[in-house]
Every structure is written in structure tokens, then in C-alpha cells.
Length: 217
Image 1 (cartoon, one colour):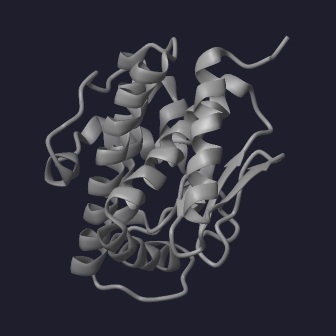
Image 2: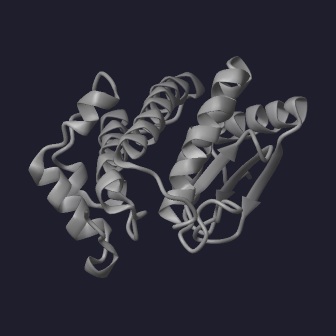
């Protein structure tokens, strides 16, 4: 008997087929985090899709129900690229500057930081909306309101990045104190996420970043 649900199996089939069709390397990595080559060295993330590198990768040293959520999210980044390759490639180049800035590999003025963080939010917001829709279509038995709260915690993280220049040590969507005060609906656009409530920003700083990593200014 398969250890995967029918919804998970349907997802795997779709991912494998689309990756094969579009020349994308699909990697399931037995680790807590994966590192995006040349972008988030020393940081790591739960998964990523990069059109420039032709890779979709997910860390799977965690419960299946957890990493399949990441996979569904990253798969929808792939779907964004399939539908609009030129636009996604441009956004990929722009947001790569953000990762290089986080890794102290380039300098960006404040206006540029806001710009690339805004682009990242718009891309992620569209992806999260797609993810929720696909979760319903594939039959995932998720609490979608809870998922949206977690997604909002992640989207609110980008304005904090613009001030600290650091990635998280604990993902905002895993911190109950943060997700519990998130709306169960998506906000309109990047500008609305930049209007971050003071309480949310303070919790992200306290719960998701160690004090010695903060570099405001």
C-alpha cells in the first residue's frame, strides 16, 4: 500500500510530467533544507524552482505532509514559468539580486531593495493563490484558511528582509504566534504587505531571526 495519498500521487505525476516535458531537473533532497547554488549560501530553504538553473528541488527530511506542501508551492512557480516564461525569467533575474544582497555579494540602494522585495512578493502572492486553487483541484485535505495564514506570514517577511538584509532562521509560517494573527485571506498586492503591522514585524524579528543577525540601517 502506498504511503502517499491520492492527492499526493496526482501531484507527483503532474510534477514529473511537466518537468520532463520542459527540461527541468526535479530533485527530492534528503535534507532539512536545500541551498540554492550561488544565491542563499549558508541560509538554505525548504525548496525552490529556478528557471535560470532549470531546477525544481525540495528538501524531504521531514513529514511527507509537510514537504508535499512545499512541492505544490514550488510546482506552481514552475507553472508560472510555463505560462509566462519571459516574465518569470525577468523576475528571476531581479529577485536573484535580492539573494545576492542577502549573501553580501552585491550592494543595493534602498529603492532597489524595495523594488526587488516587491517583485518577490508579487510573484509569491500569485503562486500562493495558484497553490490554494490547485490544492482544492487535486483533493488535498488541507485546512486552506490555515495555509493562507501561513502564506501571509511568509509574504509579510519580505518587508522585514528589506530592513534587516537577512533570511530567517525559523520560517514565519511555522511560528504559531505569527500565523495565529494572520488574515485567512490574501491581501491585494505587494504594497499592502509592505504596510506591515508593528506587532507582526516585531514577532518576525523576535521569533524568526536571532538578534545578532539583525542589521537595521
